[in-house]
Amino acid sequence: MKSERLRNKQMTYREWALIGLLSILWGSSFFFMKTAVAEIPPLTIMAARISIAAVFLLIVSAVSRRKLPHTWKDWGEFLIMGMLSNVIPFSLIIWGLQYIDSSLGSLLNATTPVFSVILVSILTKEDQFTPNRIIGVITGWFGVAVLIGLGAILHMDGHIGGQFAVLGASCSYALAAIYGRRFKKFSPLTSATVMLVCGSAAAVPAALIFEQPWVLISDISFTAIGAAVILGVVCTGTAYLIYYRVLATAGPTNVLLVTFLVPVTAVFLGILVLGESLTFNTIAGAVLLFAGLILIDGRVLKKS
Image 1 (cartoon, one colour):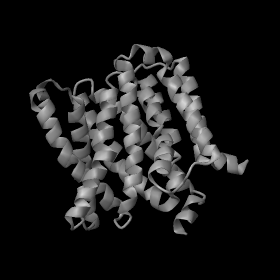
Image 2 (tube, helix red, strand yellow; image 1 turned 135 degrees about the vertical axis):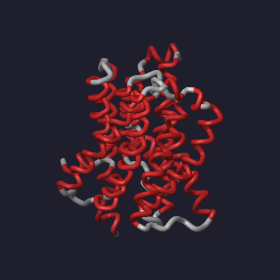
Image 3 (spheres, one colour; image 1 turned 120 degrees about the horizontal axis):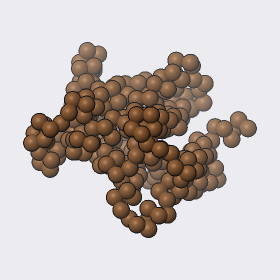
Image 4 (cartoon, helix red, strand yellow; image 1 turned 90 degrees about the vertical axis):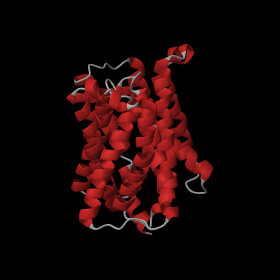
């Protein structure tokens, strides 16, 4: 009953402001990842982002006197969650941004709700397909096809590899959302903290083994290091605090609105700072993708 009330709740101005702030933080993460990956290997950026965010939230949890899980079973489940929600998608997105613009990456990452609708219907007995959702999924995939472009598909170069990597990250985020339903007994802050701690336990060894970042440290600029730090503290640690705050007060359906806003920040920073440009395919694909997301969300149709 409580979740149903949250689903239909009208948001306050403060909640709208927090969603706007969250979209800026997550949207700017594509800019900072693109900046960092020019000098730092992908796994190292991923490990730094998760570890810095984990330390930040551990401090917040200690100040808030939050208790951590006591059983190995809980820690094992949080490790899986950390892999699905952080290690895998962060690695794929950062690797993909070596080959594609940050603005395109943010638009492809907005397919997470499309994957969610499909996977929830397949893996659970909840939220089965409705006509609106079926049309929304089809429209969304048409948008993805336009974003990628027929030429890229035919040539199968690094550019399309980067795009499919970001789509893989979106699929991982969708799986994380489904898997994360088992953590309702924990507070949002505890869930985010333990997930990041477990994720860093997997991320740091991977970066050390496969990329030996200490060899490159002398050649990395303060700009790239600063981008990695901002990714951890601001775009991950602080963003999670805001996300779970809005989730608790406004509900999951309202939080979904951030999906529409994240690419706005990413595209703006990509064009203004990184000198990226919008092609016809990008604009047309974005329109189709967002039309699909609106159909999946369903609120506009209910009000009309």
